Length: 238
Image (tube, rainbow, N blue to C red; front, top):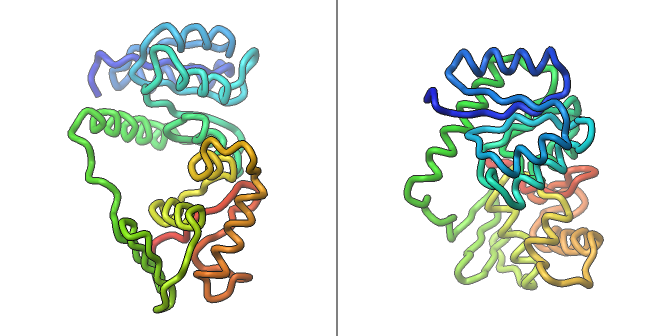
């Protein structure tokens, strides 16, 4: 890592903050520290950093709010951000990532893992300056399901399936990111953007219809899986 990189640590527990500072300085970072969420808000909006390590539970302003503020405006809209938290549920992780965090680490954590994640975040940030990646695939295939994105056609178990616009868009979104959990609110934003008359229940209804059309058994789905208390995901690629 380059010695000119500047990291902001936002952590209210002095022992953890000291440990983070020590290890980051050992690999050449210039380190700034803030222990209070309200003070961190001004710093994040005004001063650019190469990396932000942000605790969720903070006095003043919590980490989720800080993360959303950083992504909304200011000097660190695109800065790699690693979120730290004592919570280890899937819903907490999804909330952190949807708030704009690039990665998520649960306390207690090992410093080797933290430094590996820091290195990965910085590599991704470096790649962002390179030419754009190839567009997403226009044909998706999984088990007995085939999706032609350009023709907006779906074949399930050897038979063509008629889907509504919302059903197709939802299926394409989930299938293009297998294993990634989308909350109901995230799906509403992406599929029903601008439609003020839909609710999270709408997502459940469309998923139910979609399962009846593409699954072998809609009551025991193999493709569109429920992330309980959060939302839905497409089954991991085997």
